[in-house]
Image 1 (cartoon, rainbow, N blue to C red):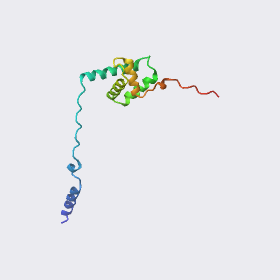
Image 2: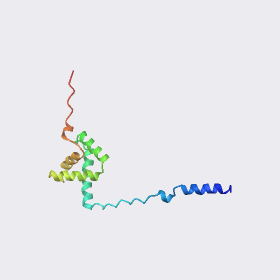
Image 3: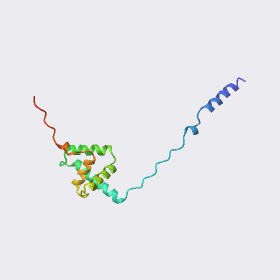
Image 4: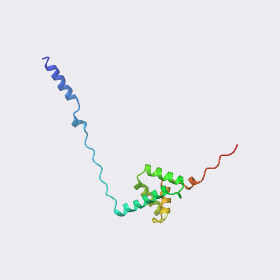
Length: 126
């Protein structure tokens, strides 16, 4: 009878322990794969990316603009930036082949405002 007690305790512990199958809830469904962008869309986004990289390397683009663009690209998918840029360019009827206008729209999407380029007012002298 004493030999059956440990066996009974072992069976009770196994029964009380959650089974691995029970611990695994229904498998979450994998997200549906997104359709790949067309070759034309990929080329357009690549052109926008080239404009961005050229701006970051240019000595003609002011540092505040570069900072905004870099921060924006660091924290956001470039596809979303490019989509936003295209939307602004369409709304404002800008030329999508003009790199300066593309860069202007891209900077606006990223949060740049013209007043950011103005130097800060000098501190009043005491």
